[in-house]
Image (cartoon, rainbow, N blue to C red):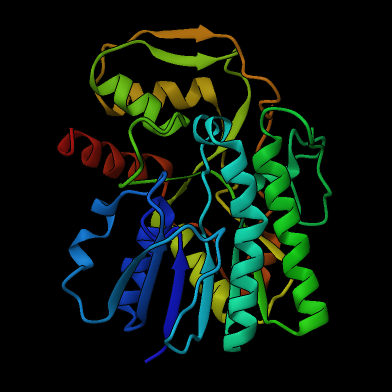
Length: 310
């Protein structure tokens, strides 16, 4: 049985990875300090003999007795609402947390997977964004704490790969949605769904013409797993290349939720990207991955979960 350590394992994507890998018969060690993670996301695993939870801040040193085959570093606030409230912890998760987990992978001779983000591209001047694009990031803006922590994390992972021969993977995650998202995390999917289900105004920032691409969680987890098992050390985009304006997205959610909400417009946040769409040519070519779940199908499942958990 292979053993995997997942930091941020009580978070949205991390908890789905815990479930997926338990089903694949991995021994899973979940590390989370629960600042933005939720213990309820993994509570159903507590009685599983192949699951272990450690409450720990990964920006501090961690000692693990068990042998490890994989280290997956997914610990970081990922919502602008969160990382603008706790920018220093966000920077520490990307810098010290990455350093600690890379050191752990080196000591254990484990494969290493870094959860990076489409935010490394900033407000892109190229659309769609290929991995070769270096980005357009404001390093000292309100979003810089997240963007730059992930850019630094990527550089550090590649340094450990080149200098210490750590077998690294870097996944640039584009907008992902599904059950277990926090209702109050401030991102577009939980915001719009919560507002629509309660027939409250759906708040669109700016003119709503900015675009996003939304990937359902089961597709994302499948992509991360395939990347983990691949031999690709350079960064790889994972996301859904189907692009929608925020206005279109608001209308789709309103329709699927059978909502009477009005759509209202508010001021656009600083440095909010105007476009966001992954070029997934490399994931298709290297390990045959592309998303399978259509937007409306994924949103129906997500809305159902939000409705049942209200």
